[in-house]
Length: 92
Ligand SMILES: [Zn+2]
Ligand SMILES: [Zn+2]
Image 1 (cartoon, protein in one colour):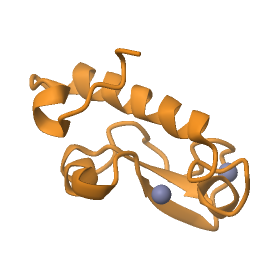
Image 2 (cartoon, protein in one colour; image 1 turned 60 degrees about the vertical axis):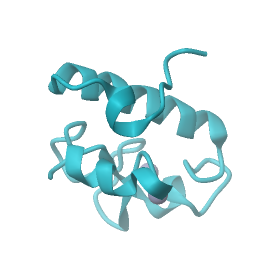
Image 3 (tube, helix red, strand yellow; image 1 turned 120 degrees about the vertical axis):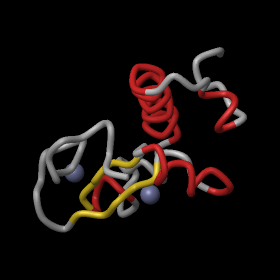
Image 4 (cartoon, helix red, strand yellow; image 1 turned 45 degrees about the vertical axis):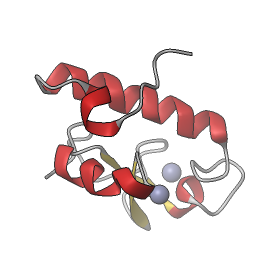
């Protein structure tokens, strides 16, 4: 499924259009659900995992993106986020 968060193929953080990686907002056991429900974004390598300013090394970015992902999910689907992902990123 295509991303429900992004229309264009560009870095979600800086808008760069080359050197892009597809990032799954929820990984591990929820990686498949991230694909299924379109909770993916493109990031340039710098913002993906090649710097301290990247989503894989900055926990604040990661948490923020998970909250945004949950909000988009709730706006898009009639299912409960917690029923699908067994997580709620909006409670703390
Ligand atoms: Zn970037
Ligand atoms: Zn990633």
